[in-house]
Length: 230
Image (cartoon, rainbow, N blue to C red):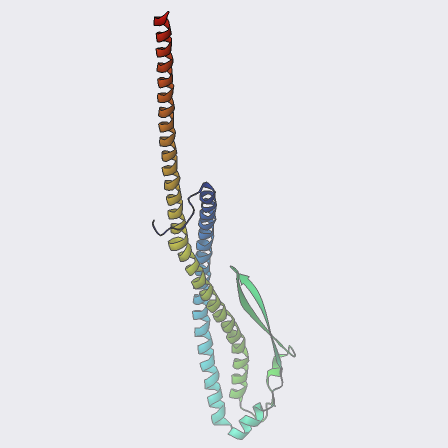
């Protein structure tokens, strides 16, 4: 209490009570935000785990198909077949808000909608395994893009959870207790001042009463002397 540096006035007490009320309301809102963010974060992490397993499995399939195609075709033929891509892709990014966190939303658009445009070569001179590998790679690309999106979302939510947690702790363990202690200190000082004021008033009242009694005795004595003289 000795370290509290506040003016023990009623105006300061009113200000601190308002500050405490605001801090307690903010603490509750931040705790609710943290809890909801944690729920969203855990759901996102579970989605990441599931999607990552799918992507890794499909990439292994793509790798196996390319390996078989490489065994069936010469390296020069493989390179020539994949040298000039036929389809182009445009990637766009927007954001959506999750509990005040702006997470990315990735979308890609191909130049044409035809599925056959992913093959930049003729089918006569290539292996069927190469077709399978290219087709599987085109499909897994969409999942990889979604995986990147939700992994980034999880990262951003984790950072926001940490910031919110620090704010909650600062309010719960520092600001609110310090404000409550300052309120108790000012209340105690004001009570002490009230008691001191009451004591002084009682002493003044006793002094005035004593003076009034002495004056009354003096008047009574004067009246008695005049009566004796007459």
